[in-house]
Image (tube, rainbow, N blue to C red; front, top):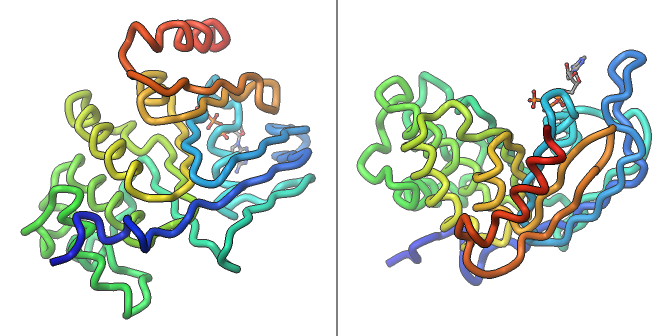
Amino acid sequence: MTAALDFAGPHSVPGAGVQLRDLAVHYGDRAVLHGLNLEINPGERIAVVGASGGGKTTLLRVLAGLTLPSAGQVRVSHTQASPRIRVMFQEDRLLPWLGALDNVTLGLPKAERHRGEDALRDVGLAGRERAYPHELSGGQRQRVALARALAHRPALLLLDEPFGALDALTRAGMHDLLEQLLGETGATTLLVTHDLDEALKLADRVLLLGGGGVAEDLQVTAGPRDRVSLEPLRQRLEERLH
Ligand SMILES: Nc1ncnc2c1ncn2[C@@H]1O[C@H](COP(=O)(O)OP(=O)(O)OP(=O)(O)O)[C@@H](O)[C@H]1O
């Protein structure tokens, strides 16, 4: 009998720490990010919000190693020499010619492929291992993408508007699922979102990007995450956003 979450529990990988010092990213002569300093503790769950074009995706891409900074330092520290970093995008980015299970285990070392079925079960897709992406709904495809990210046991999990293309109901279900699964992994998580409710539900700390750097760095206090308790935080973020 395997544990409910094979990628969690005593064998889960601890989260990575992240340090950014004086980070700058220029596109041509335009500085999208500049003088950005940020420290993320291992296992923290961060949401990044901010005006459109403010550099949220750029920050995520720098952490993923997909965009090279123009200046500054990026450090991802971990007990392992090469901590795994996984990214989940708004589009599922599944390979259409592979079934769900093969999509999840793609790129996993042979000895770790057994985790694929457990991961699919944990996202509610037991029995759909052989289904091709075109046979699944948008929400189910994002579940496969989530299973794929988690089956790799990342030390750093980067989520770029992962539910942005889903309808409200499916999205709410994905929030519950992600909240549960993140609680069971040690991964440090950075979620880029336009949705303040999503940010306040899933994160311990919300960063508002603005003016090229971190304009607000707000801790989401422990306790019930109901609308009333979160209202002051939400208002502060709303004011800064508009
Ligand atoms: N590869 C690129 N080349 C040139 N400009 C780019 C490139 N990638 C992003 N930009 C520009 O940099 C700015 C920041 O983009 P980024 O996608 O990081 O912002 P964002 O905060 O994620 O925006 P949104 O909320 O709309 O997704 C935008 O003006 C964008 O057009």
